Amino acid sequence: MELTWLDQVIIGAYFVLMVVVGILWKGRAGRSAADFFVSGRSMPWWLAGTSMVATTFAADTPLAVTGLVVRHGLAGNWFWWSMAVGGMLTVFVFSHLWRRAEVMTDVELIELRYGGKPAAALRAFRAVYLVLIINPIVMGWVTGAMLKVIHYGLLGSDQGVASRQTWADLYIIALLLASVGLYSVAAGLWGVAITDLVQFVLAMGGCVALAVLAVRHVGGLRELERQIVEQFGSDEPLRLLPDFASTDPWMPLGSFAIMLGVLWWASWYPGAEPGGGGFIVQRMAACRDERHARLATLWFQLAHYCLRPWPWLLVALAALLIIPDLHEAQDPDAGYVLVMRRLAPSGLRGLLLVTFFAAYMSTISTQVNWGASYLVRDLYERFWYPNASQRQLVRASRWASLLVLCLGALASWWMRHLSVDTAWKFLAALGAGTGAVFMARWFWWRINAWAEIAAMIASLIIFGAIQWATRACPWREEYVLAVNAVLTCVVWLAVMWLTPPEAPEVLVRFFRKVRPPGWGWAHVRRLAPDVETDRDLGRSVAAAASGLGLLYGTLFAIGGVLLAKHAVALVSAIVALLGAAGVWVCTSIGKTGSPK
Image (cartoon, rainbow, N blue to C red; front, top):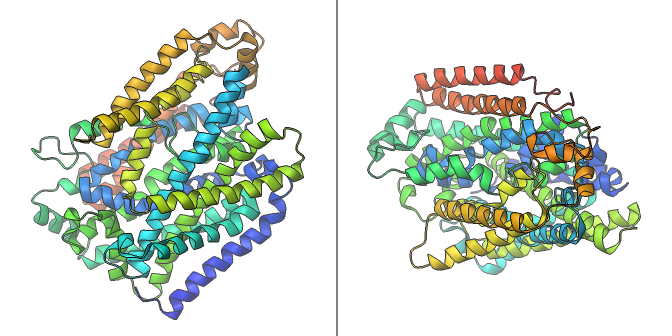
């Protein structure tokens, strides 16, 4: 894709802007570790929520969505749409609990919830696990996706990453990560959040522009639908729900059932952790108070599932027509970039490349800051240097950020040939079964540190055993996930009952700090009768259910309008309005979760 002087000016101006942000916020991030990792707990909800959205809007997301549509039709996106169930529970049930805990990382909660050597060991193990395994995997697939964009889009390759010399890939990876490191290492979470805001606006603008170009190229929305039905002999690629009556469905019934019924509670997945976790907790911890934390997560859920997807989905559908053999291609993810390369005029090419750079950098900067927070807060400060001064902690934070960048570079090199949706499903299957214990610990006093330890170890072992046992005839990732989830839950429940509960003083300490709701804490409530706990758990769950109606109704109403499915649009709009009314009636924003 040839770049004109206008394209080069647009790209250059973007990178200058990112450097300026790093310089402006460097001093603010250097005051303390809390400023570096949680913005001094003073971030407004709209900035924290937009930062969450920008983080999940990575260079891989449009490519992965294209791959899902090409392989399974629009319904293939239930792999991530289903996670909205856990997301809405995080908004209305868990967000205020996390904010009350006043932790800097989600791993820090372990030694608040549990006690003794098992809790300390679990905190250290989980921090190492996230820094050495999960975080590099995420950085690896996001950087791999950006490599695809550069090879297919900027360098004009027709064979993607595999067609380039390996040393060239190494140089590109180094440059990509170094460009993020310039401001994320210097400016901390404030710099990350401010650049996320700018990057999200740029990325959304570029995606909308490409969607308009792609739809116009095939003759408009109605012509797009007609040609897809004509080319594939049915409207299955356009269905928001799978065609279960089909003899050869694009999305098998078993896969759909697992996504909707298991995925949202079973797997610890970045940005959609059951009960909250990872960088979502980091942003909630950075918010001014419980109300801001809840509003931030609500804005994130609505923008994540309703605002972002349709420009990507329209480009993916157009790609099926613009690139006729894409459905049979080994790398259908690249369809998004190939459409960009074929259609974008001068000027828009630069903006679209900035779109991908912005999406990429918004994710990697968060992964760097978030990963470094574990190294500093949960390892360095907790075990190695508990009396470190704030100046020493800030210095350690910057060195830790550089270490995370290096780990991400190694993972990026190893994962550069993987398809993005394969990496998504691999990570979801790897952690299957752990999500249940992460939610249960908030509602049941009997959950202990050994249960979490067992869940983490069992999920890894069972995942490896299934992969080995099915190597001759590999299972679909969804089936691996379901089996792993069930067996892992059996293991951690058994271990929990075979090991002693947490000490009463540990449980009371957590109970006083967080004031968790539900009958599962009745045993501890008797030990601390003076604590006023949340009494409206049922209303919070009802608010989450109403929020799901608002979210899915809005998502499908937009789709019904775009695809001329008028009945779908009308019914979905009514569901969305009823959901919004339900949220309002439940008085969730600012009221649900307050002590009675």
